[in-house]
Length: 322
Image (tube, rainbow, N blue to C red; front, side):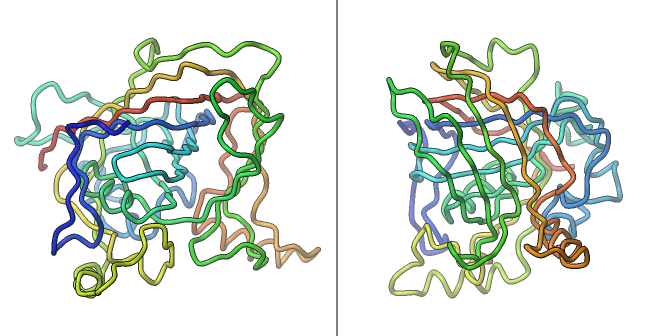
C-alpha cells in the first residue's frame, strides 16, 4: 500500500495531483542487466540532452558528472499500488556517474552513484511528481504486455513480450515499438526472496536537476483553467508539456526493494528499428527514428531477474545546489 507519510494534494497551480516523497509501491518488475563502456546515442531525451545543467549534458562534466561505467540495468516495472495509482515504467540506468561537488555540497556525498538517464511511464501524474520529487526525467509512452501480472500463488507465463511505443501511436496503426523484448522466466526452479539490502552493490542514485519543457508554464495555465482536467492516463503528446516540470537542485536517494518471489529469466531484446520492408534505406530511416526515443545499440545480458509482488521504496531525497 502507499506509504501513509506520502501526501497527495490537488492545487490550483499543479496540473495533476501532487504527491510528495516518500513513496512505497508494489509491482512486478524485470531487470535486464548490462555493462556499457560508453554512453550510447539516444540514452537521453532531447529535452534533457539540450540543457547543460542537467542529465543529458555532453559538456561541462564538472557540472553534470562523468560516466564511469559499472553495472547498469534496464528496468521494466508494472506498478499495481502507488500513491498515484497503477502505471507501467521503462528506464535505463547506464551505470555510475561521478557526482560534482562545490562549497554547497553536503558532507558524505559519495564520489559516484547510479543515475536514471531515460525513463518512460504510462501516466501523467507520476511523470510530474517524479520530476519534481527526485529529478527523475520521466516522459510518456504507450506500453503493451503479452501477459498479465502474475497473481500470487500462480506460476508466471512461459514467456512475456514487452513493447513500448511513442505516446502518439495507437494499437494497429503500424508504428513500430522503440523498445521490445521477450522474457522467459525460469519456471523449473522455485522462486526465492530477494532484498536490495542483501546485494553487494549500492542502489543509491544521484540525479541532476531536470529542465522544464519550453512551454511548460503556459501549458500548466491552460490545464488548471479547464473545467475538467485531462485524464491522468491520457498520453497524448500534445498535452505532455504541462507535466514536464523542471528543478534546480541535485537529488540523492536510494531505491529499496524486496521481492518475496524472485527468479531468473532469459532475455531477448528485439530489433525495433526495422521499417517493415526489404529496403536498407527504409530500415536506416526507421532506426534513426527509433533512436530518438531509445538507445538502439544497447544489448543487455541474456540472463535477467524476474520479481513478483515486489515492494519498492523511494524516500525523500537529500537535495543541494551546486
